[in-house]
Image 1 (tube, rainbow, N blue to C red):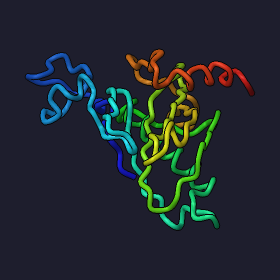
Image 2 (cartoon, rainbow, N blue to C red):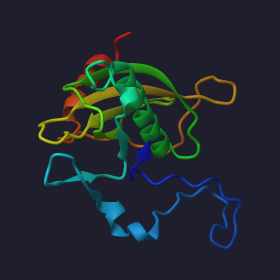
Image 3 (cartoon, rainbow, N blue to C red):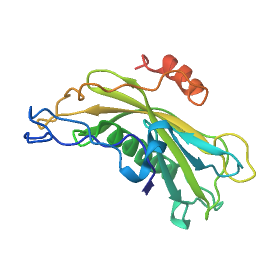
Image 4 (cartoon, helix red, strand yellow):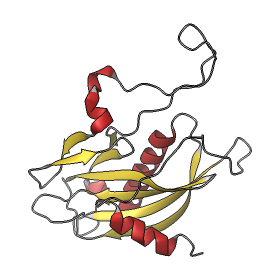
Length: 200
């Protein structure tokens, strides 16, 4: 799986020095070659569209080539493969967002929708971003960019991850994390999340 640019990974704790005399953990700076683009969003081409898809720094873009081994007897993406690809994309988004302190496990698939078949040979795009965060639990929203000659996302979903410690028990996420606020791209998933988050 190829992962696009999202939130820059957090740097590991520093032991101090000329650049950091206090020894406090600092965030890793964005790579210089990205320049201002990462700070204001990067225009990635979206399949089936002449317009760029603006990616904010909290969003991770994943790509996946749909191979014959991913397909059902109709030659389109098999449901089990969809779940695996969605999980990989959601995990990548969660890990990149939390940074090197991430030790996350899937806790719950709240929702997963596939809106039209994906034939083998297609390269799919999935956007992932954090939509909900508590002390040790995070929900990642997923949107599949439209395929060629199609309107609307080919899939979307919500997956919940727990942060665990070395003992396997829930552990707090690092301080300073924020989640996506209301925005046109994520509004439908945020509304869906409000209905599903309290269901057991």
